[in-house]
Length: 145
Image (cartoon, rainbow, N blue to C red; front, side, top):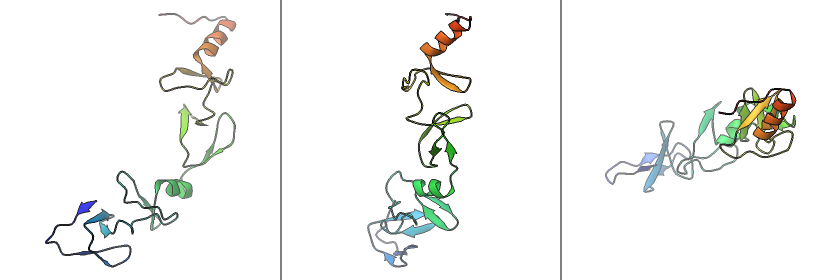
């Protein structure tokens, strides 16, 4: 967002072609915009909010959600096998992708918090307890340091 200098000549808006007489204007894609004119081509959400990001492709100006919906890669959750929309937040472990709700120990269903250890064994997510119990059953006890 730019503040218009008092002695500056009004600029034309790339969205509506009218002169921008507002106190503030937006500059995006080397063009000037009214705050209300810079919006997503799909959902019409305003893209001039502080901290928002705009995306362009195929001559469209898009919000993040619509950009990912139209051009993002979708995949399937490694735990439930259901489709994960491209705009959804996910968890990753090696090559596996998970819904946030599916990212839990696949034996005891314990959900993980930030900083929790988890293990990927035979493509299954395990908590530390279930991982170590499995190692003991297999005849291998992890070394304690």
